[in-house]
Image (cartoon, rainbow, N blue to C red; front, side, top):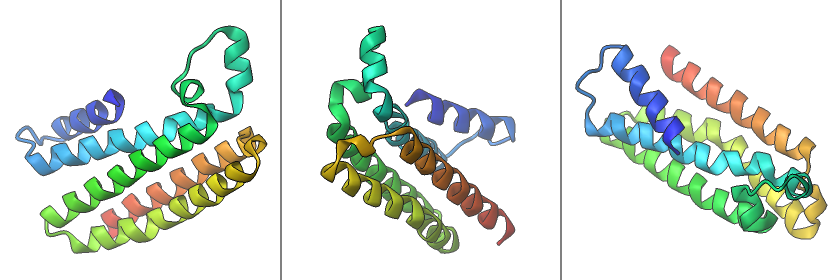
Amino acid sequence: MFHGFFILYTVQVGLGYYNCDAVNLLFAAASSLFLLGSYPLTQVYKHEEDLARGDLTLSLMMRIKGTFIFSSIAFLLWKLLLSYSFVQQHNVKDFYLFLVFSGPILLYFCYWFNLIVKNENKADFEHSMRMNIISSICLSAAFFSMMIF
């Protein structure tokens, strides 16, 4: 959780935003929520390997379905906080861009979660990496679009 907030905040300071206002801090907190939801999903396919090595991961403690529930709550809070931050800045354009570009992430997450409910073996490397690719492409496209428009 520290990683997203700290990196975003230090980049803001590095760009000269020494007086970061509350909304910028909310953006930093939102980035941490996204990472908090994303990271455990990268661990769901390796529970057996983690058990064999004696590693105790957040995903392993929550089990597969618990990891998805946890991530869905973190993603919900991320979307709410980021949306609130855009609205507080009266930045309706970026708010709508964010909603549009984060849509495929939500759709794939729901699709994957539905597969998991039916068959926990779908918590595999392929689906996890596909989730990462979709998230990376969509969020990069969102922020690139925000810079252009």
